[in-house]
Image 1 (spheres, rainbow, N blue to C red):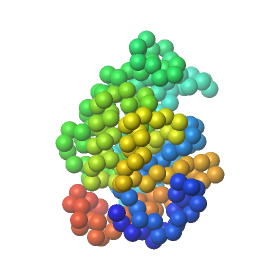
Image 2 (image 1 turned 90 degrees about the horizontal axis):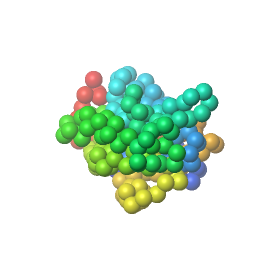
Image 3 (image 1 turned 135 degrees about the vertical axis):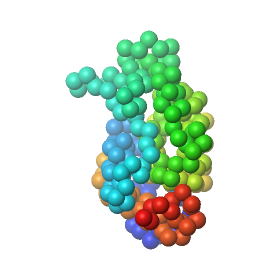
Image 4 (image 1 turned 135 degrees about the horizontal axis):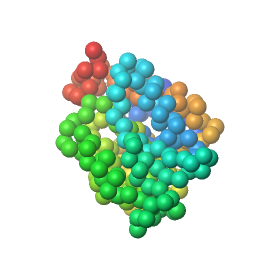
Length: 212
C-alpha cells in the first residue's frame, strides 16, 4: 500500500483526500453505467502518461451489435456469447462459449507463468466470463500478482467468487455512476501513475524499465 496525496472519488462518490492506494482497483456499478468505457479511457491516459503503448496488458470483453440491438459478446475477435448460440451454458438470453473463453485465457502470459511488467486490465469479472474455471484462475492470478490490476465488476451479479473479491484487503472498490465517471476518467489515471514512485520502481523489479 502506498500513501498518495491526491483527491479521489471513492465508492461513496465523494472526494477522498490522501488516499492509501491499494494495488487492485475494482470498478463497479450498474449495467450500462460506463464501466468498460471508463476502463478504456484509463488505459488510453496511462499510455499517454508513460509514453508506452501497450503498457496496459488487457483482456477486454466487447459487445456485438446488430443495428441497435446487442446480440452477443466477444474477447478480441472470439465470440464468447451470442443469442443464436446453441450452448447449454446460458446467461440470460445468451449461450456462452466456454471453449472460446478458455482459448483466450490460455494464451495469457501471466497465466503461463511469465511475469508481465505491465498494468493488468480485466473487463469484466462477470457471470458470463466466470462460467470458465480457467478465467477464474486468471482473475485470481491478476489480483494476486505484484502488478497493479484494474478490473470491472457488476453490481448486480454476486457469487462466492465475486463476494470473495469484494472482501479482499488489497482492493479499492470504486463505485462508477453517470455523475462521477468523467471525473474518474481524469483522476484514476493520475492516481495509478503516481503509484509508480521511485521507491516502488526500485522495490518492484519488473517496473524498473518504466523509468527509461
